[in-house]
Image (cartoon, rainbow, N blue to C red; front, side):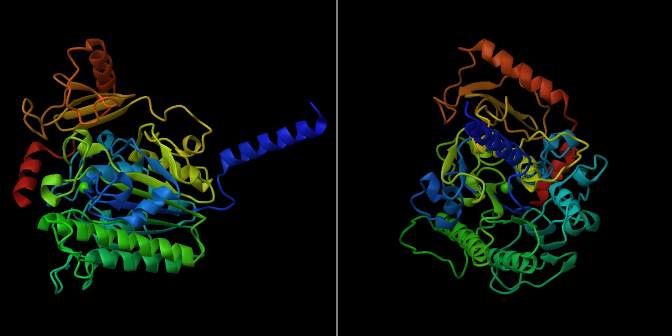
Length: 457
Ligand code: CA
């Protein structure tokens, strides 16, 4: 080898090593956008015909679109607990939505999980949250007491968007109740832009958790759409809510562009769980099931991210990933060193997206939601979810016995139970799930709590 060639190779090696340590010259801004109960089929980039989502789609087009992405829970609060900790939330008891009267939030309780906002704040990020919190309603669990410098939104599970007057009395800025006149999704856009404007000179972390498109079904007065285009009136209202969210995201992306921050901002878009089809008229096709089930329809979510200066553009990534990966990915993106008490279950996805690591990021992904279970390993999925031969019981004892086996590559709609044909596969997946399940603790909320929650909803 000629000396010149050798030195060029050495330089290349050093650059790769440097890139492994630090993906960018300076700390990137981080934005995590979460939709609520969004149907998998309801995005333009997923082939939706009756609703257009150009701004959400643009995140995928400008970066990475994950086609086998999951949430660690089929319902709101546990998914958010997993998102902010990078750990399966059942490890610290956060298996269900907290009940209205319950102020306990195990993330911030005895287990003292390390959370993304606090970790980023510790290394100098300005941290802001706008939107739905759903991780404890008492003051000590308020986002501003859990790592966020600023907060505007609501603390519970759901909120109205408008009543044409001023119904949004549960909206808080920090810990103080405020009056909000705007359609809530528009208000969240306004606040997100204000946060970016205020913090644009420093690295910032914005957690923008829309309640759209969660019930109640309330159309935006500004973004009502052509009534002839979508025949079903409920679907039309849902479309208006989704259009408002897409418009809000468009405004945020335009703001980044205006401030010349696009290149140095890592942006995620995800839904907290699958569409609640029967409640908000979302559509999870081609998947079976809805939110609150461990069918693909409850767990599979859109997952897009862009970071123009670092990640490839328009890449489709097919290996299974999970929202637990967001936290380790963000920590790696900062280039900072973090010392974590508990090892995240998620992994840093940047080397996988950049092609440095071609292996699947996970050997298996796991779920437990009361009596429902699931495990995905490669193309295979073993699951027990509400069906004609399995009564829906969220608070029952979890067991992999009686689960069904599906090959998702050949049967994306989970129609053909192959458990009788592949007993060895069932055995292997059951054993893996049982090992994982042994690491979990009991849900922090009892069956009685869940009954009370049902009554209060
Ligand atoms: Ca949800």
